[in-house]
Every structure is written in structure tokens, then in C-alpha cells.
Image (tube, rainbow, N blue to C red; front, side, top):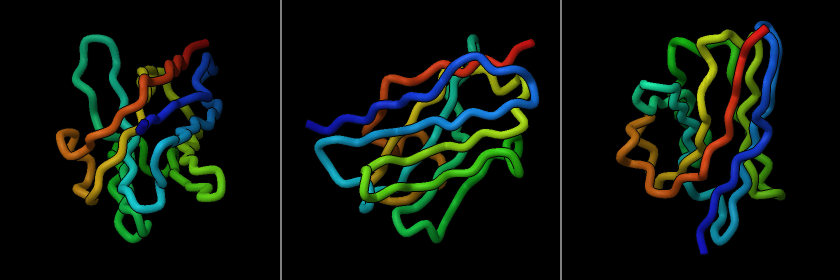
Length: 123
């Protein structure tokens, strides 16, 4: 059974950092493009950072450039989203998703989704 599970969300002050994890089971993440998306209340789900299976192609939303990075631990079949210099506008539910082929952060291309983890940036 294919599953993705996010963790690591929480409440953080502006300027702080969080690292989100996306653990996969039932398949090997190595062969898939990975995307991190987020959805704030009342807004559409948007792509934040998406990367091809090889890591050679990456899309990063302008709003998080220079602050968010993605990494993989193939041995753990896990992908991470490191978020630094967090801002209140980063508050959202964050989702990881996978696609067989890299298509930037086009949401419809991503077939498997986790349940999401809440990130709240507030003082």
C-alpha cells in the first residue's frame, strides 16, 4: 500500500525554523519526483518546492526562495523540507506528494499525497 506521512509541523515564532519529514511506505521514493505543497485557510493549495527524482530539476516558489530547501535520505525513504526564517504568511497545512515524472509543481501531476502537517508561524 502506497503511503506518505508528513511530520514535524508545529507552532514556531517568526524567524524560526522547522524541518518537515515525509516518510514513504509501499514504494521507493528514489524513482519519483517529490513535491511539497501548502494550503492556507481560504486559499488554494500551492506548490512550494518540487524536485525531480534525480535532483537535477527543481522548482521553488518565489515566496520561499532562499529560505526553504529539500533533501532526501534514501536509506530512510524519507524526504525533508527545511524551512528557515519563517514568516506568518508561511502558516498553512503542508503536504508532500509524489509524481512519476517531474512536472514542476503542477498539482494535478502528483498522484500520491500525504495527510498534511500543520505549520503555524506566530508570536
